[in-house]
Length: 269
Image 1 (cartoon, rainbow, N blue to C red):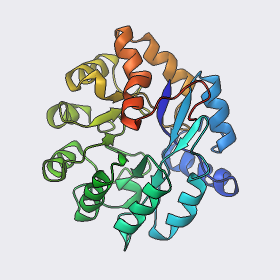
Image 2 (cartoon, rainbow, N blue to C red):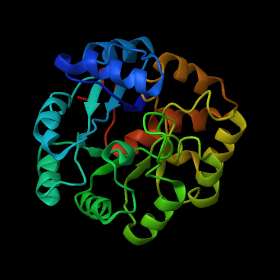
Image 3 (cartoon, rainbow, N blue to C red):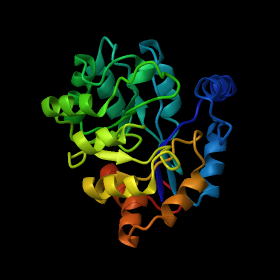
Image 4 (spheres, helix red, strand yellow):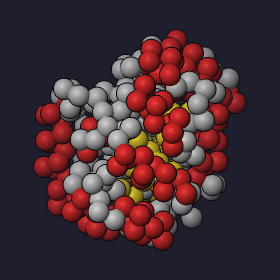
């Protein structure tokens, strides 16, 4: 089983960062926010791998964040890279991430303060697609920034019509707390949805309806750890009235195809 959406922070800033985000989002973290906490949670949940998604909140963080992320390219933690839309050399930085061996990148429109259909994102999405990188994007409402949603389903639809990124993953089932709009604008598009932090927020009926309408071959199991419990999410998905084939696709088959790799009991080898 693969968790396609998790977070962790360098040891020096983990406690402070976690406390800040927990207070801002009014959410209790399920781990200590560090690599050892995520690894312990991954193993407790019976997961074979957790994909880590670092967020670059200002251009000057590119080197430090990706240097930390590059430490996790084998074993049970597999980190993507990060980039900010205000990068003065987005092509050069994306090339660096590709050369470093990162399978994909993370974008967070709310934390980065840019709409998903802004030209700054469009050019990153386009060039990342050219390089064959997976692009994971926070989609929908974020409790840390309730005043503005920078990545709505309608904006994604308009952006996609123009750019058509090939490996786009829309977190939180296409748009957190905006699932009626997801059904209107996004189901059926050649993009992936992940299940990060949705169980308990979306009804099981709507989750299954969206998954099947969109295609269960494009749904990725994810938790958003430390903002949801990995073990609890594993048990929730196992308990849903989906076929065993659908569950296996969501738990690992779809992720392995997207990553272009098999992940075994020891994680990434």
